[in-house]
Length: 143
Image (cartoon, rainbow, N blue to C red; front, side):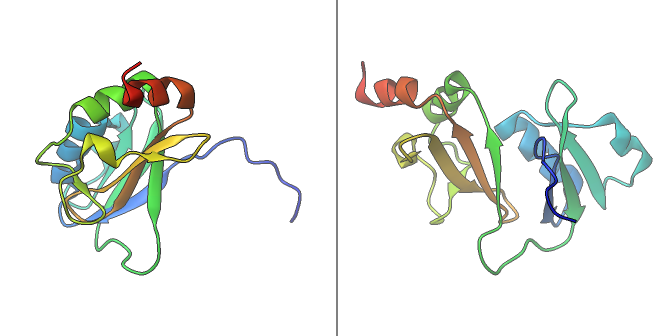
């Protein structure tokens, strides 16, 4: 079948040793919460993660994250959220892709968007992105 039109990304699959522990990290770092539908699952094997408004966006399974290629899960945030995240860096719980603590200065300017790339404690590749480019550029320049 060809020609379908995607309306939006629904969710991503993430993997790690302890889904329940991962849910705590995702809540602290990204503000994601365990979705109520997770109650039907064994949290030691799988949890559904959602935005605070209840929009399901990730399934976290017990298992090993992919180790070949780039398997980034990117989450869009507002410019204000992006800047608040950057102002909270470094954080001992947030490691960049290079294995070092992620710093405010590690934001990537893509011209259209800004991103931070980091890993969760299980090694899943994560990204937060904002398209509020001008505002974030001013934040970096101090204007």
